[in-house]
Length: 344
Picture (cartoon, helix red, strand yellow):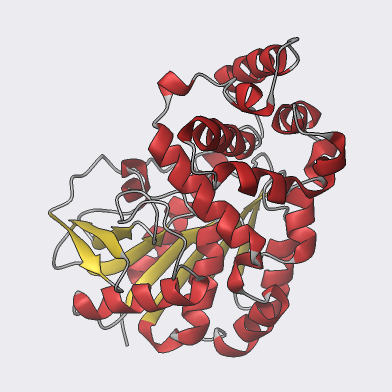
């Protein structure tokens, strides 16, 4: 495969807050070619929000690139709101965006939790989709949650130690509920440090090769968490909170914990079956890091078995991040290849 590079940075030509319910307004932006073939990018998390680098997977001369921050995420309002915030309402939001922008059909691109949402949307609205590009497949089944919030410690004992440092031994078996109590606490001195620590755990296991600063942060957090006067709140503050946006971290953690507590409001096995029966006519590319520790590759393989027409690209030297070289190349190749498709 020829080496492909991320497209140059581009600036949105239009952005807005779209009111989607009595409570929520979602941030929607468009960049690239206003007359081009539309593609919507579905971000991960749940709770993460979009960032400018995600626009760069698409040729701005060809695609009308649409990104939106899901309910409670990023620039959507109110930040961190979990009321009236489910997978089903997000599917409705995606369809509302399509209709609001007068789009007949579009390409759908989603990674990690975004792959879950893409499948949930596609199985409800298959006629509106030109293609699917899915990365780091996640179906929110109990075994996938158990892996992420426990069994992954087999490979990342340092990251897990940092997450549970200061947590009473009796509560480590249900780390999700423990952090939910902290993150949803009304005292920012408790909720924000806990949110930073929760988010840092996932960030520390994203790539096959960790960033040097992640290792340094982990070492510092370990030192602080094991100090004589450590408390859960102080240990959670081990990561330098001055370097992050506390309210943004809190919103992300609240949305993610809310979704995980409800298995993301889906039946993962049923979604797998629906994909097999409803998406067989949609060109689909599945990109998966072989050493993905957030969303292990078995789920991507099972999805490919359910969708035998799909192209499965198992990247031999990648973890979960979309920006690892092999994964990034495979995603760019998919968006290039799908230029040949036309709406029906």
